[in-house]
Image 1 (tube, rainbow, N blue to C red):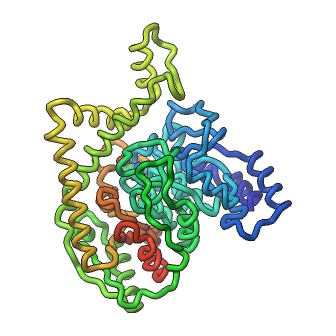
Image 2 (cartoon, helix red, strand yellow; image 1 turned 135 degrees about the horizontal axis):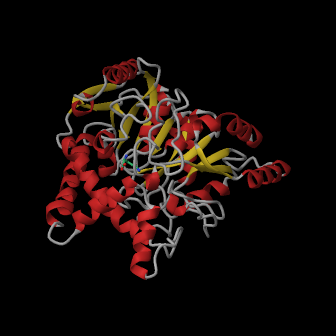
Image 3 (cartoon, rainbow, N blue to C red; image 1 turned 60 degrees about the vertical axis):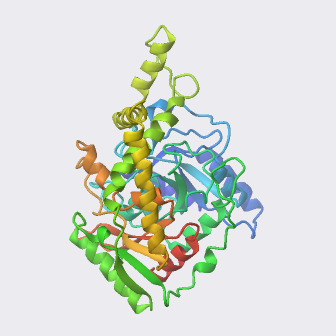
Length: 448
Ligand code: GLN
């Protein structure tokens, strides 16, 4: 499997650009050791894996898609998720491209190379986990890990026709995930199929002493959820998720999927999430504020690059950051610093937190009467490379359907549900109650 994975990478990754770093020598020798001692118990025995490059891997370069960390070759430890995969004897093949510090929706903000959509290389794979989605879609690895702050697992999964899960906030340890917006970030799996996804999430879930925000909630067997039975399941379809701005072919694909659920014995009804309109504004304030604080650690001293163009400490901080960060990262740091500055805190950050509570309440009241919420993952299929790069605000609107789910903290999966008029995959999002990934997988598997 490991051989096949590298063969495929050498065959196609020149055109796709999913990988930033390969760990070929290590992976091969690990595979040899595994072959010498087959282990029936190991749940991911020998499975070729790709890891998003903001998840720390011991002694394997971890760049976050940023020039700032281009020489961060020897992280000292593994993220908890990487250790958990290791216990089940997976093989890490390499590190996957992403928008710089996970800020973006197309992987064009990577400061190394854009990744291309394997279905049509003139199009983006989505982002920020674009490398993670493209590598799975192109058959370069059997699964990958991504991270999702406002949609960065689900939107690229949707654009690349694969399955991507953002678990409940707190379900998976964030220890070793380079923080973007700590109150929103979650790690999750990208796979070809729903059952594989459930298997991987089962391995990486659970409380972790190293992450105080990881939750002490029992992890059920997600694979037990794969029954195909959705009789009596109650589905809510928010009218705000099928409104203006959602492409007709996307709408049609989701409506067709709802018909399939009807045939399987589930019921669906239109509902309203009245505060959806405010989600994007609240998210960009909160995420940028948290990012401005989290990214303060990149100062030219502790990690990565240090500018040579200075002869005093303040200039050294300043030049290291000006030279090391790309435009989008700078934009977010400035926005966040402004929003948190004294005198503005109540008007911006506090207000955004209040909106966040309203959005969470919207979901909670829906979940009093329904098992899952279904809608499109993204308003459009994959757009063209370059199409949205001059206008950050249009880029931001691509996450309008995924962001509310992060604000609410709920689990959400994107699964393929058809193709657009121009032959690109369309994804459908299934959102569940907090810590009810089980029902999300049951719903997803029945459709697949
Ligand atoms: N596209 C969104 C942003 O740029 C979401 C990113 C993410 O989920 N990491 O913030």
